[in-house]
Length: 548
Ligand SMILES: Cc1ncc(COP(=O)(O)OP(=O)(O)O)c(N)n1
Ligand SMILES: Cc1ncsc1CCOP(=O)(O)O
Picture (tube, rainbow, N blue to C red):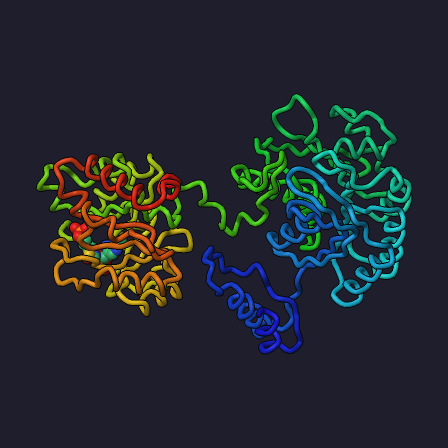
């Protein structure tokens, strides 16, 4: 799809600008369009945009955390165009390395020549080099196509402990590649291997090792102290041939460290490609990796001991996953407040919210039809505190300004409220947007414009909302069948008819019921809510209602 669109737009077929300013987490096909139009627009406005380029010569990590994959993502995150020459395929995941398939030196040469003869590179970064032949080939090609700097990450052992390149490459590395290197970035075991097993376990030994490795030819030696035991911070040493510079960083507690070394080296390469001096490049790269580790701390990818980094954390896609973000099964029992109803029973909105959440509501909407803005905001803020404590999402009915003011989790909009696309533009990709739809056409439009869920009804007649057309169970079914989005049923839903609404064959998109009077026009909100939850658990299979 992308290529077809690209060729139609730009017959010269330049690469796309993948990391555009678009940061939407929406799943709709907007990304490719944005990337194409931004790349095209960039070309039209500034015909000669010079993009910093890094060529990564490294192994592929099928697990996506290290190797070529880490290099591409790091460069993209830092605004640098990354090309690749793959030295080996690895079958790898968060548990370890299950297989290695080295690329022949001949085919490595073809890749290097393809890239360097056309696209060129400001900086070459090397990672896994599985054989002395590959190193020879790389060095010969670099003689033909000189670049501004070579950053060598002397990868020999994966973080899992699996060997990626044997001692057989040491000679070629030391004698051929290191003399071409601007920076070499060994960790402690790699520094030790380069020095035929010398002990590199203390700061003093790191300094000595840096000086010894410097004699092999690189302009700078960065020894990474991540493996240094007994210190809370991480000390790396950069030796420039006369002085040692120390870089201190915080140790981030996380299992997601797979690919840290590759990412640091490619970040240094990216910064050098942008024109930084080595010392600034190292500092910027360390800051990037430290931030990336922090932003990766809670990711749960794979079941092994070493999870991957979230290289593109600045795009925010995974940032909100620790918060009570929206999942379709949040719609199971959707409580919609009504202040006049709650007042009649002598409770504030926030007291009602506390009770309905205790009873088992899975999402709450603050719907205030009479309160002025100040009161609405106060009730929303008080309710939000409670909802956050329980990890239950809370959205605001109609009022985007109130949702923004209290940083609610989203809004619910009617057909006559602000258009969804405008609401999405204001609220950004992370906020929940629900939309009322009575017809399949409205449901499709809601999806196209960026909504997260649909509220459909009134299913039954209700006194809670005046002049509201009833669509019946049949109308609800039509909306559900047409809707690409999850649907919650609303309108006149009480404990005696909830089973009928959710009865099988239940349309796949129908996730639950939204209720006002059935929960709040009740003497005891907790008991009323528990009763709904029990009926829902009965109507659906148990496992469905338990996952919320
Ligand atoms: C979950 C849910 N579905 C539908 C509605 C109705 O919203 P709207 O059409 O905006 O009508 P009012 O609520 O503003 O009267 C809803 N609030 N929640
Ligand atoms: C807000 C709304 N939108 C469609 S029906 C309705 C009111 C639902 O209230 P109740 O659950 O008391 O019938």
